[in-house]
Amino acid sequence: MDRVTFDKVVSDQLSRSELLLTSKGHEYAEKAEADTAVDRLEHFKKAAVLQGETTEQATFGMLAKHLVSIADMVGARKAYPQEAWDEKITDSINYLLILRAVVAEGRIA
Image (cartoon, rainbow, N blue to C red; front, side, top):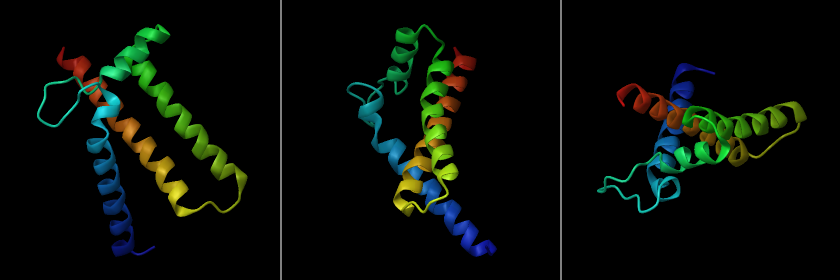
């Protein structure tokens, strides 16, 4: 793959990840809107409490589900539609970004 094509793949992926993450605020915290002070990590913290884990561990558990799904796709050695790859890869990247936010918050608190 040449550099221009690679750069486009990366740019498209980053845009897809950002759009999905910023538009799903309501799914990650009740009443989350762009102009409110609602904790965007609220659901991850609640999941941690329910599972008796740290927020980092709970978030990683959610990421692991997506990584297992990707591993299954890779191992199946069959063709999947691009949309399936995009969904799984985007979700994985986004859970890593959420984990990054969780870790950053822990260092600030």
